[in-house]
Amino acid sequence: MDCGGNEDMTGDLARIRDEERAVRDAYDSVPYPSASQHHTHPDHLAALAILNGLDPAPAQRCRVLELGCADGGNLIPMAAEFPESRFTGIDLSPKQIESGRAAVAEAGLANLDLRVMSILDVDTTRRSAVGGRESENNRDDAALRPPTPDSPLPNQFDYILCHGVFSWVTPEVQEAIFEICRTHLAPHGVAYISYNTYPGWHLREMVRDMVVFHTRHFPDGDERTARAFEFVQFLSETSAGGGDAHALMLRTAREHFEEFRHRPAYLAHEYLERTNAPIYFHEFAERAAGHGLQYVSEAEPAAMEADNLAPNIAARLHQFTSDRIELEQYVDFAANRMFRRTLLCHANARLDRDVTPKKLRRLYVSSRAKPVSDTLQPRGTGSESFRTERGAVFSSAHPLAKAALSALFAAWPEAIAFDTLRSNIARLLDEAPPDDDALTDLLASLHAAGVITLHASPPNCARGVSAFPRVSALARLQAAAGLLVTNQHHRVVRLDDPFVRFMVRHLNGTRSHADLVRLLDAEVTAGRLDVSSDGQPIREPQRIPAVLQALVAHHLRQMTEYALLVE
Image 1 (cartoon, rainbow, N blue to C red):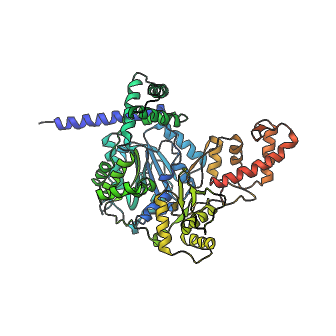
Image 2: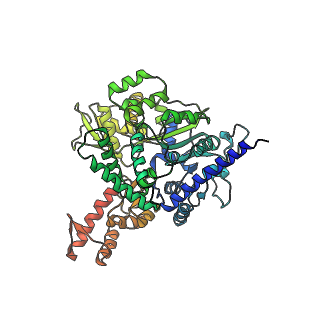
């Protein structure tokens, strides 16, 4: 009997498990601290699903699975925000799961289950009679109950997240990720998978090859990262002043390493892992289709629109093809894309990508775009400019666009309903509310350009500073533990100032502004905090209370702008 096939299978399995052990050891050696990834938030995914014609589960009552959850830093803010939802995270690294479980216990979360588990070991055999999918009328509400330590994974999830994993695992694990999405995704569920992509990653791949070669004899992860950083600095110096493509590539690599100097774990796993396999978008979409999945959109819509390119370039790209997948691939070619956050759903789900007033009435709108001018005139005929969160400038002379962004700026950090926005625009322009279709077209364009954000439910934000200001319980815990806190828009806010971190830790809704001043005064008197004005330390005790009062008012206003304060 010829057993060669079985021997080959045994050898393949051994190789795959060896790769897994190497990945586990790498993350145990250099843990990858995770944090909130707002593109993966179920409310954000629900909004994009609605925009594309799906009927997703609400974030307030849903089931979420994260593959490669690290220490749970992305799931913990979700679980704290939505106690009626259930969250499950799996990761190969026992060290990271242990750290995450400690944080879950400290936050008192009963709806988050973190497990040491391989993606290859996720059970994909529990399927219902209809092709492995449950019906909408037979939703398993038991899956929303708090997990027991040894309970099996739920059969279906409304949202499956896989951030920063796909490119760093073997093809076998990549196929398992697709298969988990096929068999465990609810009928109207959404899967999020991020990955490095070509053509942009061709340049970084050259840098990766260089630093992997240079650090090949250093077994310690921290030392490898330090050596890689030094080597990239050296290489950029060798090409200083050069104008050729190679010199530009090395200078760009140095800038990328400098950008993440304070996050060496990111550099270690981005450039020094055994596996890093970028893929062209059209290849990713084809492989997903092979598992009964179809492309929905990008989790960052502004990154995928051909029409965001120069008009002449966009027009030419549209001439090349009318196929959506091909068009996206051409956009990647033109924009030199190197990273994607792709949303998938079941191939039999019916998509409708037309943006309509009916869809927008199910959503809420926010924008952090600020007027460039202090004398904004929505009714005027002149052009007005608004600077987005990322520093891009959007300009328009159209009264509807100017009034809409003015209304959203006034409402920030709240997200407002479609009809509320119509009414606010009418007041600003002193005329009848805008036509539904005109406002819909405007919001669709602003969303595609990344100027506004759509929400399936409004975030719990305070527009002003109350007499007894409050931040979330999770933000207070995070401020006590480190520099990063999660705001009410699911974004990470870095609090470098010890003064501000101390304030955040004590904003539990029971202290007045005067209470906060007294509390801070005691800390300053005890020498545990320093207070300054215009960059100069205050030494005279009699001046400190007045300075503290001004600082408390200033920082509370900033916390409102940063969407940290809650009602």
